[in-house]
Length: 206
Image (cartoon, rainbow, N blue to C red):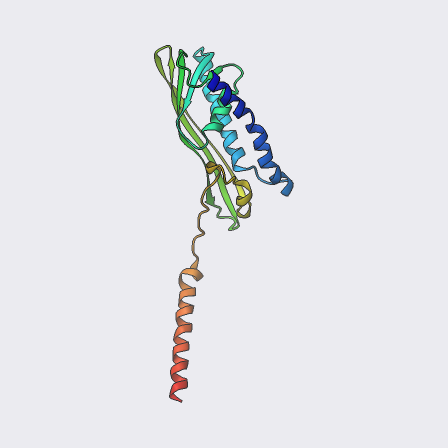
């Protein structure tokens, strides 16, 4: 319980940290998109609600919880233990009820937006499943998957990502090369080079 109390005290500080991280974005523009951290936090809350609903149906009011290693593990854990209906502990060997959660996916990704070359489709996704050990009886926790998509300006990426949290970062896809880049530009370069060589020979011959 001592370890859990320490975890809970640390996690209580997260909402304040989150607000500090989002505050510069609010100052930059009134309609600035949510940070990627906020997107993951929102998805984690939905996953936590699904898990706690399952536990209530199984008449579980006290439960030990463990989560597979992931960079966003602390965000998911925070939202799970914030439940008011269930008392959660961590690494408590005396607990009769235990859940083991596996984070299959928890990330933000960018995709090209065909209607605007300066914009991107942002996708946040979370997928998790687990096992409940209720007094020695194993039960599968239904898999939870949720996706959030919106459209953002490519220039906003540097503001919505938070470097110290890897789950808020993603590579920006390269724009497809057009006709001029793939065909016309190389052809123009070759033609210019040929003309230059021809002029050199012409000058020398004279």
